[in-house]
Image 1 (cartoon, rainbow, N blue to C red):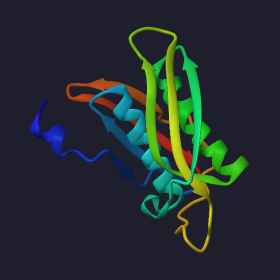
Image 2 (image 1 turned 120 degrees about the vertical axis):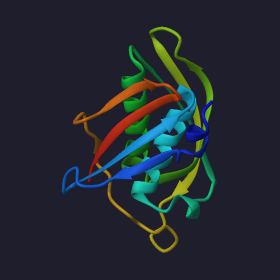
Image 3 (image 1 turned 180 degrees about the vertical axis):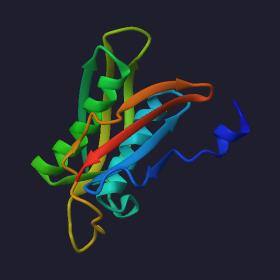
Length: 151
């Protein structure tokens, strides 16, 4: 593992992509780490993650034919839970993952709490993950995802 990878942030927000969108790159040495770091970035785009408690736990699983689609499904689930159940999350734990061959599978346990506008510093109301400039690629040091969120 290179020193540059060890010093790399788990995600970086990108500017000048589109006026009504938030863009970021997520990184990970493994697909698991990539998924978790992308979940952190989506949450941070919505609220200050360090202010979120861990009162409620939810488990879900996603299955897909590609790693790109698997990550997309996980991120959409995080956004759906924010909209449908008014929940935001601090912890993202992968209980099981299969990324050697299709179908790809991830089972996750996430912990968070109901949105409290007095406690949680709101950033943006993320509506969806877009397919514009969306990709997941294997790099020399692991994996990189390019994600743009519709707000």
